[in-house]
Amino acid sequence: MEIDRRAFFAFLGGPAAVAAMSHEAKADALEHYMGFQLNQAKLNESGKAAAKKFPTAAEIDKQIETRGNRRGVGNLFISSTGHVSRLTPMPEKPTFADFFTLRFKATSNHVLQSANRAMQNGMTEEIILACLLHDTVQELIKVDHGWWGAQLYEPYVSEKVTFAIRYHQALRFYEDKAAGYEYPDLYRTMFGEDYKPEPYIDATYKMVRAHKWYMEPRLVTVNDLYAFEPGVNPKLEQFTDIIGRNFKQPKEGLGFDGSPVAHMWRSIAMPDHPL
Image (cartoon, rainbow, N blue to C red):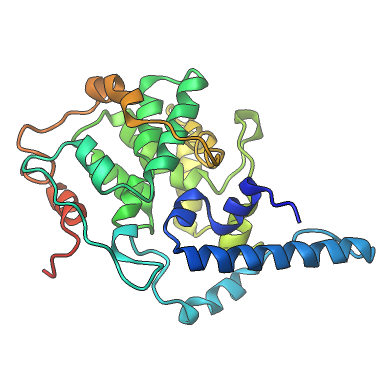
């Protein structure tokens, strides 16, 4: 059976999710995927409807008590292998690049691909930077990551970059085919085919849709879900100049500059601290 790597990775939640899996988990997932594909092929041969089958929101909800961890837990605090690994200590005055290479391991390739795609598409430096930053806070927490991510970076980037990061989350649930964004099948799998965003998400979308900066977070979504390409590995150095011009690195180091979000950076730097 031929396997479409891109479709397989998307089925599992993207390259970041695959990278976090053990070899045994990958093997099990591949076997499950091949069985799923085989069943689909049998349905086609029998003349039955071959439409994709997505779970309902109620079925997703029933899965809560079957999981070993909650879906909103950040990548640094969970393990798919049964135990977490020891982290490399951070430098005394850590920079954004230090966090990117030493702590953003589960999200780094995806956001690099996103920023690379934005650069290739001729986006502004602010959009490229927003794409580079937009999902990195998921190492700390996943739920409402747009808001958390904007808060994490707000003291160090422009208001427009913050706006793009904060609201890309809400815009993901609403198509804008004119801008090149369609509702992804991945969300039908993750949230249920009948899922309706919460009222605060809907209200946020309507506010942003009428805002003068609507295209900033929209372009992050355009360069977000389509940035899961196996074998594509951009490097952070490609964006060194953009970071230098648009990111205000504190001389004390991130986490030690007394900013309102310093504790968030320390939590990412030292996730093993019990208090």
